[in-house]
Length: 162
Image (cartoon, rainbow, N blue to C red; front, side, top):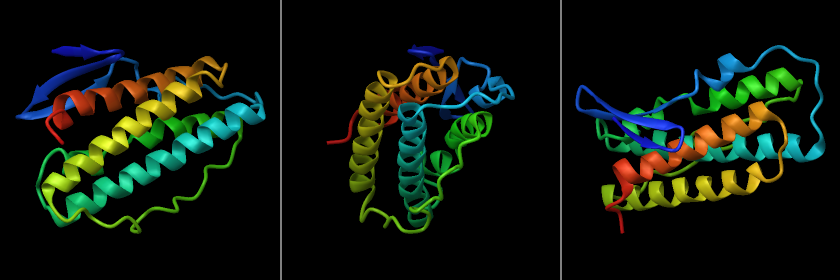
């Protein structure tokens, strides 16, 4: 098992899985009536929107190139569940998914790899930036976990993309 930040990598049935060390941020989010300030509210909304866009790319890729890993695995991931728990905790409305079914599949697997690498690199940069804007421990934990998962995806699956 290898580590990338708070994420551990394991191989299960020949599939590389980036598993968060945290016991699931969504599960760790407790009921609260705490309110978020505009910076944190905007940060979780931006993160969710970016995750929707990434998921739409992976679903389109998985649909076009049936059975090709890691896209089929990523298309079924539940990364947005961690964020949904935070929206619920703070009483913030979850934004609608404006990308579902609207992102075209890449023309080739090589293009899919490049697009995925660009997407995950963008997510890492976004989470690094957003981590400076939020103060809530649960949001920091979720953003750190998701950034680490993106780093893991690049290092384990996308490092050879040009």
